[in-house]
Image (tube, rainbow, N blue to C red; front, top):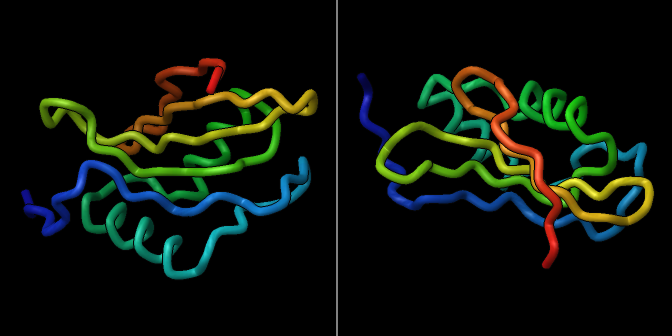
Length: 109
């Protein structure tokens, strides 16, 4: 197994400035490229595949995304912050290896 040179527990993409239910991910190109490079190096599903799974679980607009290493080295998750049509914020965790939605929860903060 190839060892990653990335040591941080999370890689933050960026927050959207304007939220729109129909808008695609609108992060800075450098941030997207960094997440894509890490996911490719680790053999994970693509950011676009993970986004599709997250939005199927909780429709809305993606406001933020991170690629996070789970505690104790038990895998990676894409963590999406999604704003629904009523303006409520949700957190959706997508297993970055399998694409399974691991959790959908209301973000109260």
